[in-house]
Amino acid sequence: MVTDNEIKNKVAESGIVTLNLEDFYTGGERLVFDLKPLLFEELVLKEKDFRQFIKDHDWSAYAGKHIAVTCTADAIIPMWAYMLVSSSLTPYAATIVVGDLEQLETRLFMNALSGVNTDAFRDKRVVIKGCGDISIPVSAYTEISRMLRPVVKSLMYGEPCSTVPVYKKN
View (tube, rainbow, N blue to C red):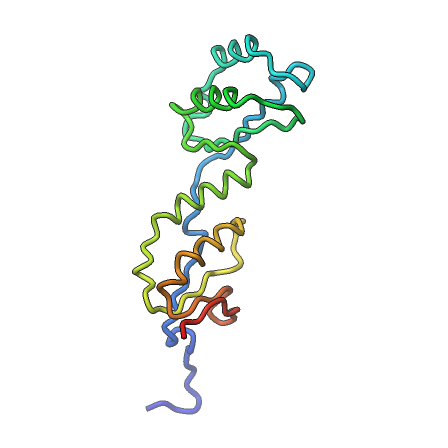
């Protein structure tokens, strides 16, 4: 018997499933490997000097780390230079992307989200959690929306007590 004074948790009774993208955060140190210091006068990559750097550099310092390879100078970098750096990092780095830290974070989230079993959300009301302690790339929110839309009953953003509707199946 329910009395007028009994407090009901309507959110808990609603059957809403909360998905927190922070759960898909890949741990580990993130570093930028910038080609700029390796350029002659910040303009030109000298192949002989570059190859010597590749040979002499201690690549083991990148062991287990997530690396964004970039060039912050306004210079034309030949494709083979990125390939040499990537080839040298491969035995050590956990992840390698060409780009900045934002592109690295996007790749890490895309990799993590690729393992989501969308069938677990079939015909459910799903809230993608909003605020948190970790900065989540916008691309992660758009990717999980793309993945879940075909299977969910409804998709919302925010917190279960205060959501913004994103999609509702007819």
